[in-house]
Image: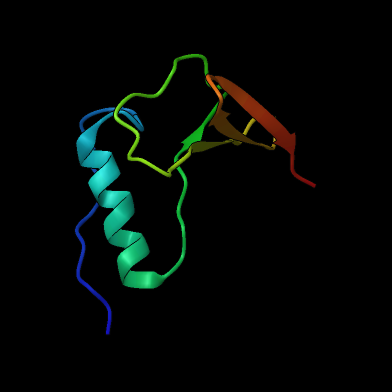
Length: 81
């Protein structure tokens, strides 16, 4: 049974540090069982904050077709084909 969730916050850019965005992503995962990552137009440059334990911050760079994960204090990317 799917859980209802509303639209994403629309008053700011996608920000994985924004608790409203984080809640929206978690609600989607709970409802659909499918992970949805924030999309950005360039490689990430800022360190994420408030990441829950045993979690990794990830974004998709749609310009360069890369998946980025913040691991061990640095962003690490892999090209998607």
